[in-house]
Amino acid sequence: MTTTEKDTLRSRLLDERETLIRTLRDHREERLPANDPARDAADRGDLELERSLDHRLTLDDAHLIEKIDHALQRLEEGTYEVCEVCGASIARDRLLAKPSVSTCRLCQQSKEDQSHAPLSH
Ligand SMILES: [Zn+2]
Image (cartoon, rainbow, N blue to C red; front, side):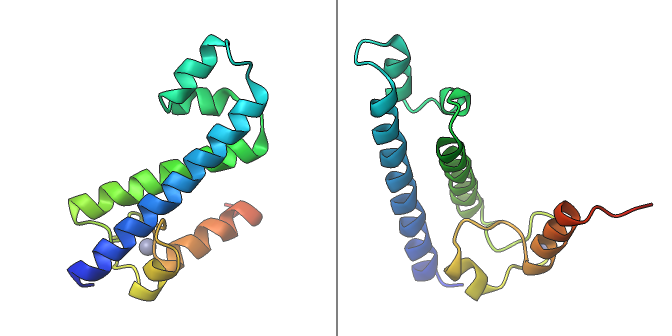
């Protein structure tokens, strides 16, 4: 993967993160009264608070932001193209299609298989 491609992915991740944070903020403003102290904490981008908000959409978004942060960290560390489960390299087209992934196709597949049909030992 070239530096240009990595830059492109980085800006895509940052854009996606920005959009998610905006969604969370809009959502929060519907929920919290303007003088609620929790709102100030929320404006600082407190993910712990996000987790405590009992709303499926919010939880999913907060989880995605974590995945994006993780991917950005992996980009900085130079481990972005390495599967964090098995250490194999992640296919370039997979990363370009979904920049927040951190596992190769096989590991993703086996993770999904396990969650749908637990292995019996
Ligand atoms: Zn893997």
